[in-house]
Image (cartoon, rainbow, N blue to C red; front, side, top):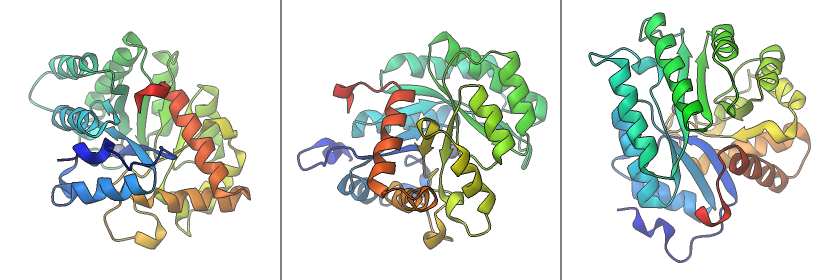
Amino acid sequence: MVAEYRETGRPAPAVFDTHAHVSARAFDKDRHEVLGRARDLGIVFLEVGFNEDSSRKALALAEEAGGFCAVGIHPHDAMADESLEARWQYIETLALQSPRVKAIGEIGLDYYRELSPKKAQADAFVMGLDLARRHRLPAIIHQRQCSWDVVSILEKHGCDIPLVFHCFSEGIDYARKCLDLGGYIGLGGPLTYPRNGYLRDMLKFLPPDRLLVETDCPWLPPQSKRGKRNEPAYIMEVIQAIAGVLGRPPAEIMKLTFDNGVRVFAIGEGEW
Ligand SMILES: [Zn+2]
């Protein structure tokens, strides 16, 4: 269905949305159009899985569309009937199946909704980190209202792999800790929300070579699309917001974040 994504007429990739869920059900009716809008703007994205089924779909979409993906178990999905070991084994088979798998994630902790018990979340997180380290893949970290627990697990279980702190919504102190761990900071829709001045302050503090952009679509649309479904094409509003805060041309932010994404996910030139 999406095979023509890589056919003639596709502009060279210029913007890298490093965190999307286009294989989610929210796109079942018009995925083809969503991919077309992204393609027309030169936007490529990393499709991110959050459990076994969505990781399988993420890989299928990456293969079909000529893109890339991450496979993992989200803290919300940490609790299940099947053992975590068996579930991570399945994720590992996906990771070994294709060079299009560029990261393990999303993994982490979420105490805000706590849809899985904290212990299960921590176990799943540590297993995900182990898998990433075994295969020398970056880990995409989800964290919500649990910040320092994420950091202490990362400190305890090593962080000798690249870390991507996705949908970053913390202040400067926490950002400093993530940068000390060698982490990259993913910024998306929340940066554009009027009440999030603290995020824009944090952005000014970030070293440019650690900055990534993302949509986390279908969730977290930028300000002008609030209340609607998000999609990769809307990443441009995040780029504009960053450009405004840093006083730089949008084209420069596009190139900077694109190059950072290519570097952290180790995407080779001929792989697009
Ligand atoms: Zn996500």
